[in-house]
Amino acid sequence: MISLARNMVNQAERALRALEALQPVAQLAARLYVAKVFLLAGLAKLRDWETTLALFMDEYHVPLLPPELAAWLGTGAELVLPLLLVLGLGGRIAALGLFVLNAVAVLSLGDVAEAALQQHIFWGSLLIALVLWGPGRLSVDSWWSAARARRPA
Image (tube, rainbow, N blue to C red):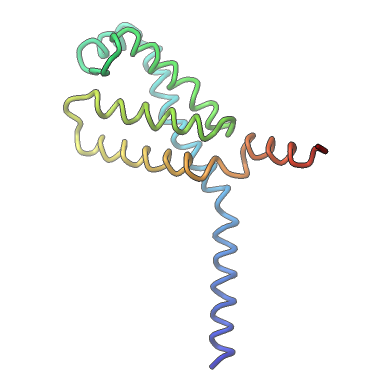
């Protein structure tokens, strides 16, 4: 009976190690997925700037900011932060910035369709996970940290 229990514990430990080995890949996949969503949104805003400005004046009611400034800042964030996130360069800061942008987008729209709201919640969940656990080993942040640790003091 004891050997059966020990065998089950060993199997569980192996399974956990395998799952932990997949964490960097999962973190990279989350970064790539969310970055694509926001980068494409930023590029769409750039393609039709007049419509973007009209949306910020009429539809998106960003608190505390004039519509034109909100359009510039939001579009800039959608273009720069995803690139940092893909690289994992300042990954937690980029994820936090996109998390805030995502929250402001939801709050600034008066009426959000349920399906759209679910997407924003999913993106927010991925982003907050990246803020809490970082961009993972497959990132510039990780490589930089490892290089600094190897450097003599």
